[in-house]
Length: 343
Image (cartoon, rainbow, N blue to C red; front, side, top):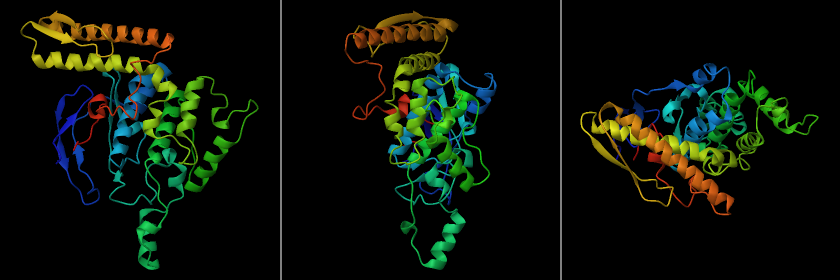
């Protein structure tokens, strides 16, 4: 049963309206007010590109979490791009919008070309349009299931293009037709420059080795070799910034909880640093300074968690701030700022 609420990254319920449409009958569409700037606006306001230490913890990690959860539900968005990614950097919140092309692959075939050409995966480029499929099925007596299909890995390609654009300020693939786009993708990813790097990275000195590795995992021409969103959560690039993402989420949740209590009376809030094996920290706050104090305390707790994790890692142990492994099955509806109805 669908609930008419959204769960943000701090677990706060937000009112929304749900519509069912004939075109997207597999799941409802949500219409609600969403705060933040689009990623393309954020890049423009940041001098034309984002640094790695801003993009990864505040945009890339939460967006990858959203995609991993969508894909576990069988939903393929098919329109991942900066214009559809709303960001609240100060709160570490990301909202994915425009599900007009989204499909539940368990209920409908993914066999038609959809999305924006610049962010379209190779396996989507060579598919017919919905109208062409209609004529093939109608005049050739074919079944839709007989046509070649693709899956959620198409979203991962779009994520890689989005990340490249945000880090460099340039769109990696620009062409006027699907045929030209396919040729350009193959050229930039398979041909090497003088240093032995794919032409896609030629002259891109601002990209770290980890960033290049992440992009190559997401931008594999063959979807069989392309990482899933779940797998990308374990990539070293995202792992390195995971403590910073966690600290922002702690602060946002606690600030929201403090705000919900009201600003009138003194309140004692117990902050449990779940990533540290120590006792809870109790902070007494009052009046209008409540939210700021709680956020500051949360940041202190998260900093201690990061230090403890680094110490354990240096000693040969594993970091408690690591991204959720597949076996851990974290409730991503709370861990990530998901902006779509939950079952």
